[in-house]
Image (cartoon, rainbow, N blue to C red):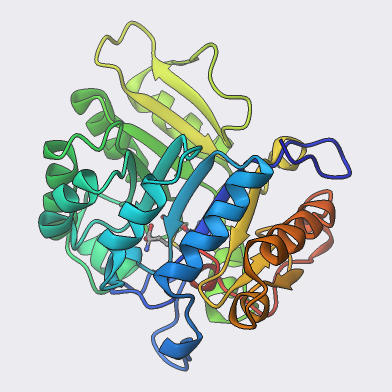
Length: 331
Ligand code: SAM
C-alpha cells in the first residue's frame, strides 16, 4: 500500500473524465466565462486504463469516476468496463448528477460499476432550479430510480448545504432518507477556484453543526452509527429507533477537517495528479503517457505524487485552489 510522508495509506484514486457539466450549481460553475479542456487534451479511455493499472500496481484499490459530469463522456461505459476488468480494482464508484442515468444506469452496472453517489441539493423544485440551475427535480429523481433498479447500491445522495438557497430543506431531505432508507450526506461548502463560485461558497457557508441541529430539532435525535471505514470522510448517523437503514452523514471539511485520514489521490481530466483537493499542487502524467513512457513512468510519477501529498488543506489561512474549480477536479 503506498504511504505518504505522514504515514497515510493512499489507496483511493478519483478520476475526473471530463470538465463539462449539464448543470451549473451556483457554488461550482459560473454561467459565463468558462473555458473547457479541448477534447484532444482529455485523457483517452486507454490512457485512463493504463494509469489505473499503474495505480493498482502501486496498491491502489478504490476508484471513483467523476467530472464535470462523467456521464457526458460518450465512452463512459467503455471506461467503466476497462477499469472494472483490472484485477485488483476492489471498488469502482461514480459521482453523478443523475440526469442521464435513466438510460445509462443499467449499462454502467453491466460494465462493472458498483455504486453511485448522486448529487441532489433539495427536494423543492423551485429552489433546485435556483441552486442547480439547469436540471429539474423530476430528472434527478428519475436518475435515482434508475440507479436503484440497476442495483447500484447503496446510493448515496450528495447534498451541498448553501445558505439562503437550501439550508432549511435539509429537514425534508433527512425525512426522505428515513422514509426510503437513503444514505444522505450533507456537505459543507468549500471555496475553490477563486471566482464567483468560490465567493458564493465562502459567503453562503453553513457549518455541519447547524445542519445537524436543524434536522434534530424537527425530526428527533440522531445517533452515531458504530464501526465504518475510518477513511470515510462522512460522520454517519441514523435516527434513534429507526429501522429503515437510512444513513445521515455530515461531510465537514471546513469545520472538522479530516485531512489526517485522507487516503485520496486525484487525476484530472487533462492528465494531472492533483495532490490535495484544496490545493493547486499537481504532477503531470499526460506527457509521460503521450511520449511512450508506459506503465513504469506512470508508476514513478504516481509514487512521487503520493510522496508529495500536502499534510492537509489550509482553508483557515485563506488558502485554497486558484487555478482549478471543483468541476475541474471532481470533488
Ligand atoms: N457532476 C457530478 C455531480 O454533480 O455530483 C460530479 C462532479 S461534482 C464537482 C462532485 C461533487 O462536488 C458534487 O456532488 C457536489 O456535492 C460537490 N461540490 C461541488 N462544488 C462544491 C463546493 N464548492 N463545495 C462542496 N462540494 C461541492
